[in-house]
Amino acid sequence: MGYGVTTSFKAGGQLHTVKTAVRQISVAPGTVLKGMWNERVYRIERLLGRGANGVVYLVTMLAMEENRERSSGSFALKMGVDAVDFQSEINALRSLEHQRRTQDGRVGRHGARPFLVDIDDADVSGQRIPFYVMRYVPGVSLKAYIYKNGADWYGLVGGKLLARLNKVHQHGWVFGDLKAENVLVNDDGTVELVDYGGLTAMGNSVKQFTELYDRGYWHAGSRSADCGYDLFSFAVLTIQILGEKELRERLKASLPQTRDVKDLQELVRNHPRLRPFESWLTRALKGAFASSEEAYRQWQELSHRLYRTSKKPHRPTPLWLKWFFGVSVFLLVISIALAAWGFDLRR
Amino acid sequence: MMKQILLITDGCSNVGVQPAVAAAQARELGIAVNVVGIVDYGTIGVLGGREIEDIAQAGGGISRIVQSHQLSQTIQMMTRKTVVQTIHQAMNKELRQILGADGADSVEALPPDQRAEVVRVMDDMSEQSQLRVALLIDASASMKPKLAAVEEAIRDLMLSLQARVGKSELSVFHFPGPHGGEEAVQDLEWTDDIGRAKRLFQRLNMRGTTPTGPALLKVIDYYQYDSHTSSSSAEEQTYQQEGTGTDGIWSDYIV
Image (cartoon, rainbow over all chains, first blue to last red; front, top):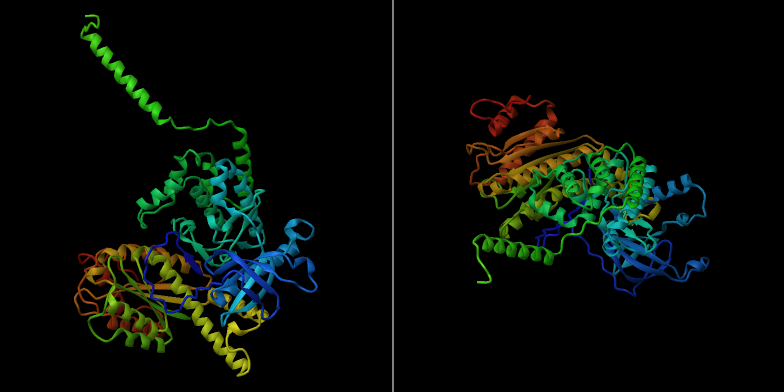
């Protein structure tokens, strides 16, 4: 079964009678952390984000004796809220990384830079907090990227994201909690997945998910970890990014009992920016892809074709033109009516 | 096997034994009791909130007060957290026994490598252990507008349970009974079939009283009873008919 869910709608003013006190970790910038076991030292620079399992900070690793080159490096440091959940996330990440190294083999490519840098505990105001340090990925969220650069980029960036997911799947894992906030796009268009709290071994129940992107939430299948699960989330993500307003309206109108994946398919069909992707999205929503390899290939073919067909840009008629037209018609009708009455202007 | 009771209510009990006492009894028998207070308009009241907290504490579980649209994710999270917590507690106990007074006394205190190994085992256990969750739904009159959300949440929980590797079953009760005689009525016996979790409460006769304590005891008895005999008895089937039977035609008679 799932490990955690995060809802996309945060209800304001909700009452919480919390028995197992949820610890809110907060560390001020400038604080220096020292690992209890590995004794590496980090300076907190700023908050990068909060996930379901913990908080991520941008840190600088401070002078290390043998590893000179790293001493000035920037990293992302994630502190865990719950030691056991957090360790479980680390375990999954470690085995994924191990498989990456042994299966992808050769070093030298930029991707071979280790993702996990350090795993340790720190003393934060009297509490022992587990943390891990990973490679820092600068970039903006997928949503912000598309908003800034335009929907034309989605075919390309989406393809890169699918390639990432495909890699994860090849190693026998499912990302699980795929959502707009968990995808970062670099300036050069590279795509990175962040927050691996949902990383689940295939066949197990998805550890962590967000309702909106969850296959079960849309009555479209199980919560077992398989490639189709991530592909479904990817489809919802696409719909959310290219048709956010329409999706929100539809969510508002639907009841949980009647919520259906057909609503999503219909939305795709009737949306100018989503329609080009309809064939792919429908298959992903139905779980019809045999593998994520196939899904990736088809996406690439589709987006290549899209970029090469000159589509007529769909521009709505400006409002002033509509008014203008209306007024002209009105005047025309009046003139005809007057003419029909035999009204003579010269008289 | 992991056993849990999940109580969903919207107010204070007003009949019979104190629910916290019943919950403490459940805990004795190795059944964890979680409680969700569900409020849509207004608040649950100081007393109601207090009672919910007390029941969960006595039952060794978790309590939350949420709005009905948060119900699905809340009970999903609670069920899972309680599984992990149960394993965690057992593991800490083992560690104290193995490592003695001068060793680490909890999973958190272990050095990273050992912790990684222990948590890996714990993860396997929480994924593979057998699990039974009995849902106990307050069906007093004020709950009526929330029952659709409750039903959706049950479906959602069932979906999560199905995804587990270990055998997971769910059973549903509501209280009070239709004639005031019964403390709780069974709507669904142990099942892992999501199809059966539909239209559970369609013909409910909603009444005013809230005998939370007695209802809890009833569910505990069901757990106990069920561990003695594996097949369900005629007695339980009559509960089921009372819950869902229609016009004397026992259309929902399920063997």
